[in-house]
Length: 55
Image (cartoon, rainbow, N blue to C red; front, top):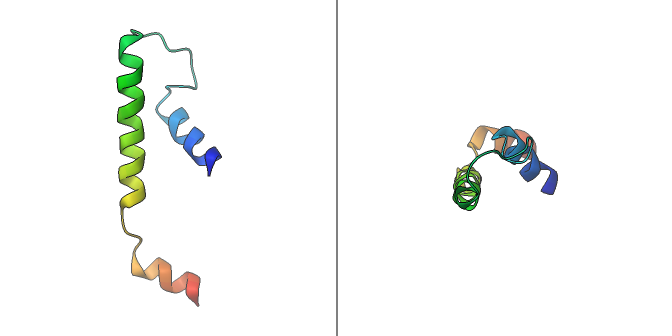
């Protein structure tokens, strides 16, 4: 699971490259990205995918 989170952060390029913006905003941007990730986790899985994995 940790590898998935690191991959998400790299998608937003916040840890993939050197951070070149203001330091004060690093925490804000990191929190925004974590909020987006948590929002994606809460999205319900479609029933079709669930039934395919159960069968």
